[in-house]
Image (cartoon, rainbow, N blue to C red; front, side, top):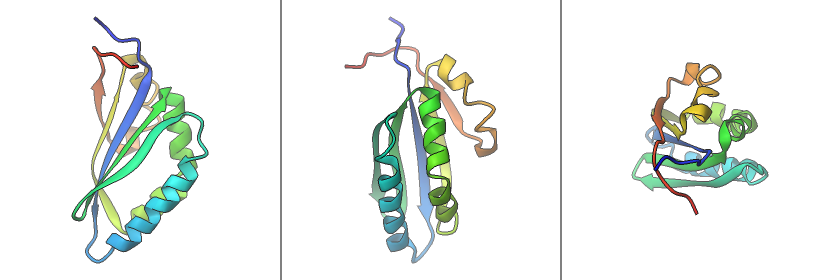
Length: 120
């Protein structure tokens, strides 16, 4: 059964530079404070494994994701000084992913097309 789910999730993986983990944790607080104001954000959080960090996040459609990226632009710029994005995945149905191709082409993400599933 195909899904009608329109949620778009983005999965950035960061490698924090040596000695910068505390600074990255402080930046996480800023990311969360900015994102908490977004009505299209469904969930958002950071998971740590040593100096590797994953941001688990999802939005109501492609527009929600684009709004988020504009909202946290200054935090993303600051993160580039203390960490490197090593992997960037975007998951969603093909119609929503198509809306992201042009705006996100400079980020070179890997797109995963959601074909089957349920959401409660």
